[in-house]
Amino acid sequence: MLAESVLAGAAQAGHDVEIIDLSDVVSAPLRDCRVCRNAAGRCSIGDDYEDLLVGKVLPADALVLATPLYWYGISGQLKIFIDRIFCYEAAGYPEHEHVKRRLVNKRLAAVVSSEETYPGSLVGVTAHLQELARYLHHDFVGVVQGFGNSRGEVARDPGDPLGKAFDLGARLFAARATDYCIDTPRSSTVWADASAGTPD
Image (cartoon, rainbow, N blue to C red; front, side, top):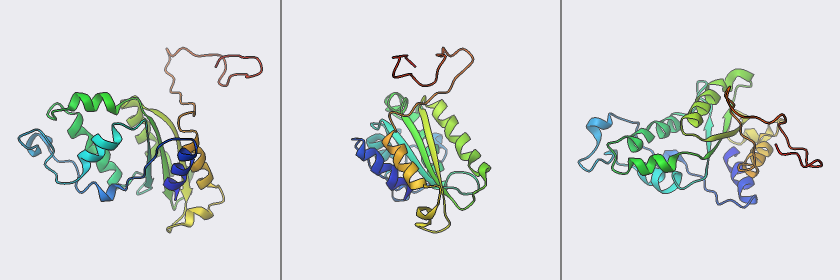
């Protein structure tokens, strides 16, 4: 439900969007690419991962990852999806330079469903995705967490995660994303004063 809400918000904002269920595409975890690649340098795992990565992920301007919270981390399917990127950006893959060029500089967000309402339950997921965004030069623009323990229950969460997910999708490309370092040039304001014409 969270993923559908993000999709609806992004579609309303005029973006072309698609939901892909990783369990329909990714069948096995990353192996040792040094011994697993076929003679042409391609992954020998017989699923649709390459079509997903090359045909859908690389051309995308943004990725919104949807996952349940499992043991305070992302789902196994999502972890496998991320792990297997290595096979395609490593030098043994024939088009690895193309993959690396197209994989970077996207907008990244996430929606997470969980039973546990403990505020620290999402720390592992957030840290993982922040590091993924940093490594791939993505703008990490937000995470929405919804609470529920059965399918559809998140719709009854009084914190309105479906509305927040819709908003995340709607502002996916407009959301401010900063990750300052000590030497980052900064303005003295976070938000522009529209009435004064002050740049941000």
